[in-house]
Length: 346
Image 1: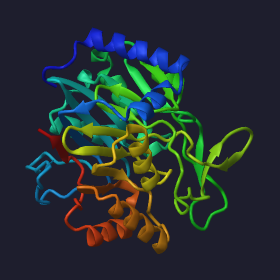
Image 2: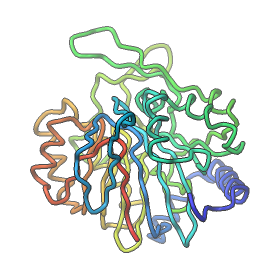
Image 3: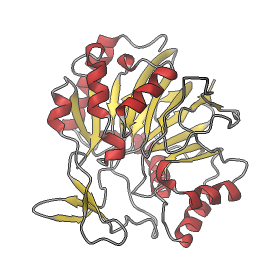
């Protein structure tokens, strides 16, 4: 990362703002709603560190740079998702990791092939508490701990550390999906910051806070459970987070993990709290795998109506929904592959 913020200066700022967030929750959302302004980024770069699919021969597009396999060096793909991103604001670069994937060996293999240095990360963040997004976190943080300053923030939504379960098709016994433990993160010297409202985690990168539900059809499957007491109950993913960025002269880029809250809800929430209507790109898991055809159709129609310049479904979007987006939005659609770098702005 070139021309980055001074490490001590940034950590002082993030710890101070983290403390402010904990004591004045909601102020950030109110300011965004009143001013209609969020920090603009001159350039945003997103690396998809891992995803479900890799294709070495997929051509590049105007905004993508794909990793090309060579003998002995190949990108790892898995049922998991991890991002690394860099914002450039007023000539200064800042970096954040968002989600961590499933297999730390595979993810770190990809990090090395992509030439990234996780020791330069200014903040870490997590979309939600499912293992395909957090399982590699502790291992990755341990490997890079000597170069990550103590007190670096780790942003999560509420219930990120809860134990979760899944009822698989044809079964009545819920599968234990495990849980990430707060104390394991803190033991590595990071500062856990729980957010409920929109908040800038690094310059130009904003976490959504709890996502408002406005569509009638985007519902969490009843097969997904959470432990809130003595036994599992249906999970509403009230604390699931996404990220959004206002790219100068382009509009919003919205980055989701799984979008259990609904990708349409997620994008509309980002528009509302940022005061920016123009959507430049929507990237991430849309959680339409195994969804009924009418739900896929409604989602595609509503996203199309928002007129994004680019649509990039990943991870848990599901084959049928990916095909539908490609068919209905051929000019905006980009097929993601693990290891792809996306560049927005100048």
